[in-house]
Image (cartoon, rainbow, N blue to C red):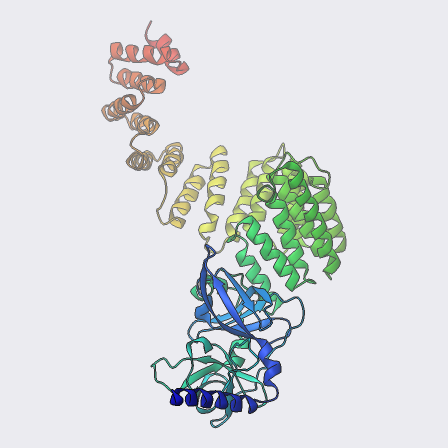
Length: 574
């Protein structure tokens, strides 16, 4: 019994002696160390550990493994104050470190970060989280160093680490933190390690990092890159990856982080306007979000050095909302309001992109001549594109009295603008151009357009393509080519009666009446009331001098409403 008492007294004496040897700064800096508890998505406790502040505004460091899978985290300082973790600012799974922001109401005690690297033999102090008056610190030295990146080090220490001391700060004799305490991976007793605090304090999230596994496994909101340009890219990447309410929180956080950046207000205005039905259940609530969108556009204008750019974005947003919801009855959200903002932008600076939007608005309002004039201004600039030539062609086509050749010329320009030779982007413009060429009877040109389309699509075309190209070849008197195309259409869609009827027509022109009759029979099997097929059958029988069969077929076609069959019946079957 005496031996036990003596051992206890010795232990207390040694602890007291160690406390007396504690550096003067330790009682103050222990306030920067806290405990952190993490929670899973269902709210259950996930884990607990140690962390510490490295700025007075609440930036802190801890272990990545503690945060992996966490959707919420709360820190508690030695005075019992609890604060939520607001966002993750950086993480490295390999080195098991994380930097994060705590929502602190005021300035907090923090540990200044040491300048590295530190040499072997440097005295090191472990400062664990403790709420008692006596700080159970550990003292030792750095016995080995290795570089992590740049001047940042990974340090071996000559004292052991208890399980509850992992990620506690390791400090220099002057009270600067140089590492996060980590266990010896091999399980050796008597040693521990410290991962560079300087390296951890400078980890940043790149714009695309929120989608890699290191960050995606943490459900807590991610912070923003320090550079506005990179943060703006990150915001853009998040736009379609979050639901409406979550993305609104993201936008609010971006604006709070970068309050003088107009892009944040413009993005939130767009979110309010386009997602108003997801954010509010009632018309009154949705109208409130339209008002908030207007307020954000005003806020963006106050923070922008380029007035015309903000006016353009205002016009673009208003028009986008109006075009998507034609039931809106709000003067502030109308095509007129969009045009007014756009005219103000053009008065400030007449840019092609502004005229393109103006053309879009005029086209929406069915003011096709005005739309064509605006697209023509764009096409006369270095901003000309396949799309602007295409919409100029569409506008021109809607203007009464336009010559088809003018439309074809504009579509030619759209095709040329895709590249030389044209790229797959030219495909829709080729098909539209072919339609006008067919109307003008330019069948060889139409066939050439279809052939180029086929090449651009690497032969991956539909049955409808073969059907329409067959018609062009038929009109150009390329009957064998037409027959080949309609047979390809039948292969792709064997249940379409119209294709068999078309094959029959080609065979009639080729005077292959037996083949034509076979196609007609197949068509009528699929569509027994196909009046045109009875007419074709009548024609085939007439050419074969089978008048009774011809008249019977023409009579059936006439009964089903085929006017040509009725005419032939009257002429040949008296």
